[in-house]
Image: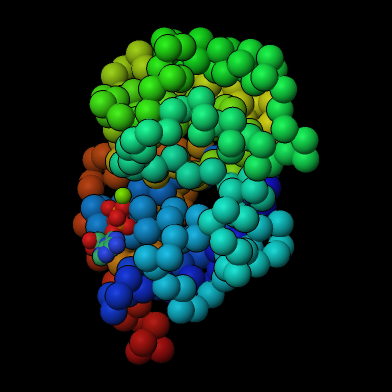
Length: 256
Ligand code: ADP
Ligand code: MG
């Protein structure tokens, strides 16, 4: 799936969170967004998913060259966009199994057979080293932070999306679980050729996922794009130097 974010401006209530935001992601590519807290990274992911908390006041989001701004969240999910939440919510009274069955059937013309469904689910639980009894528990209820993240990846593997947005997938996961989750993501990418947008603060996950591009976001937009080595630069210098050089460029533009 190709995703094009063009000159996007987003407001929450009266606060501008994203402005002049541009990003192009092609099929089978992994892009990473890094940036200080509160610059709008999670906002971007929720806007792509169509959350009604945010208002797009300018620009567009194109999927395979077609605008998705008029689509509901449900329609975007059917198109194959999947968001792994930074803070997955608990849903009391709906089991993982019930939820996944409903979600799968939403993207199919005929409902999935019970045998195929259970087999698929059991494989996915096993791949993530997750006890299969968990499928009978309410979604994320009393799950640890790391278990919630693994549960989101089980959802991803079951739903088979074409564009994955992974918002701080690494937070809450122990070293072994992080490696396992990344292996699952990469394996899924290999078979599906999906595109991936990852938001993270740490270079550790990048060692496993080996992204094609890294983008630094500060001051409402992407201020620098580079390869893997950019993460190293951030680790050494922090974001301040990128913030000030972006500001300088803005000022030069004004005086031109
Ligand atoms: P981050 O880059 O850390 O993921 P967010 O996208 O979560 O940042 O938030 C960007 C800014 O918007 C923050 O200042 C945050 O407090 C604010 N914000 C996000 N969602 C809401 C909301 N629903 N209501 C009010 N403010 C919000
Ligand atoms: Mg966030």
